[in-house]
Image (cartoon, rainbow, N blue to C red; front, side, top):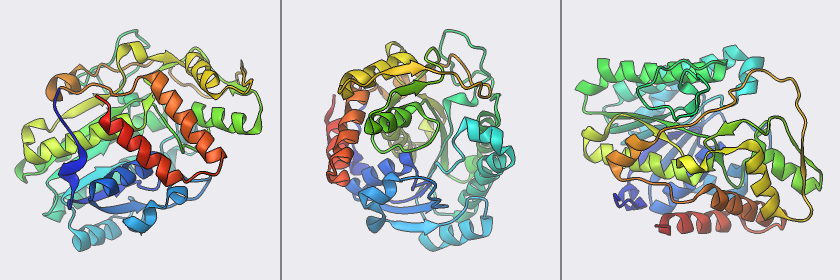
Length: 353
């Protein structure tokens, strides 16, 4: 197994888009722990409670309010801070919202990617660039085996399709520009993440937490859908590994699936069963469809490329991931120090063999 820790990032300058989101906040916290200089770039919208506001990481990074659709502002930020590494996670990330506002979804996820790529191209400082997309970029045939990186890209809904476009834009910029500029570029296609501090609407674990805190029954729309669920630290560690390895050697630049092992691809109902088991307190759930828009019923990733290239393997199985999510949520319920529990879980994760 390839040994990887966070020491590489000490004193590195890293521009992270979408740093105020759920994944972005966890990643910012990991990088601060590692001693990196983090330049966060986000619209900073406050539609719900945010982990970013609860954990205090804002005071330890360069926190910039900006929209990835604003190329002029992006270029100014790149010019001022001269990042060595760029991780692009800013996006409109919800399938259902993409049906309600497809134009905003496409403009953010497509033109946002064009602008980030253009800023990287013109920067002269970036050596390693990672675009984070999604497992939903593939043309979904609802088959039972995992999608591999060479499968056709063709997301069904506006969110998934816009992320397919984001992949293609990155590939085009790599072929046209980055390959001649000594910039190592990868994309990472991650599965569904869970973990403490996700307050988003229309996601199963946040729905479970909200119901548990209100002592209400959990409502599940589609208990039979299967997704590659994983703890949020799992893909974040993989992102950092990819950016570090390709920084040192461009042979690692490519596109990678990041997901759980095959035996951890659970149905949504089975995932909720695990949540109920670890929450206790008589919590229960019921199925209640809402005739919502199309979403895939079965989706699984083949992560053999990431494993064979880096000797990578998941550190926490799904049961552990749910257990850690419940642990975080109960600490939040009890009014405990959020940053302390995040730091502890990051340390536990990194020490897991």
